[in-house]
Amino acid sequence: MALFRVEAGVNKGGRNRLLGGWNKMKAGDVPSEVASGVAQQLIGQINSDHGIRMAQITKAKYQVVSGKNYKLAMLFHVTQCPSSANPDDIKDESACPQTSSITCNVKVYHQPWTSTLRILNSKCVP
Image (cartoon, rainbow, N blue to C red):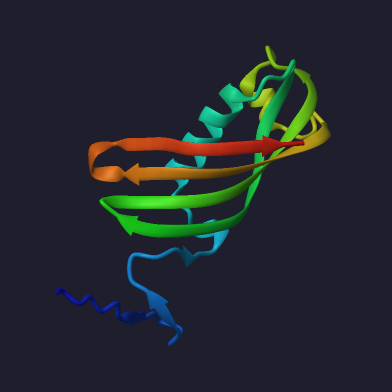
């Protein structure tokens, strides 16, 4: 009979955490290629006649695997501009004011050395 022992690791804050588990991180520490790549994919999946822009990442966690998994809560702004408008205009709040918001919870797999960025699941709600 094999016995397995799970040991907790100690992070910089001195708190115990489960190795291989989910770890909190600052939203601003999400790599820009992850944030922009996920935003671009989600904007393409959201069915809207209006332009949509990413506003911010509100929550973030990561898990070390054969790369990293991220759990992100992302806030998007729906604008007054049509979805066919110039993307630079849609990003400009003065050119395309916000009319409403969409929050997306998304789980992402990122392996930078193979240029892999894959959305594993997502749920977006107004």
